[in-house]
Image (cartoon, rainbow, N blue to C red; front, side):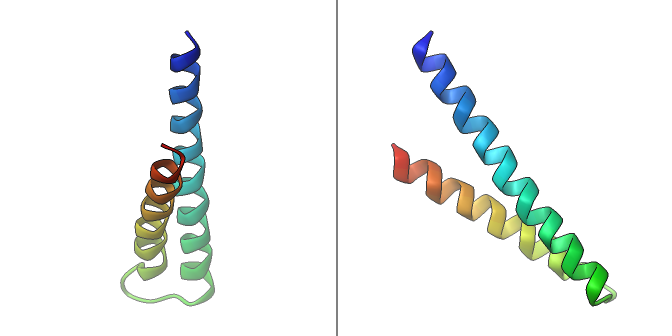
Length: 59
């Protein structure tokens, strides 16, 4: 049961990190409107990359 809780914490941490970066990217898109939502795109990529980095660093 202890292992299960550890991995649930990892999942929530990854979701929170990606969500934070996507929201930051959407804010950038709102501030500087363009034809392509580059802020959201880069925010999602950075969020996934940062969450993977943090998770792999823990294990």
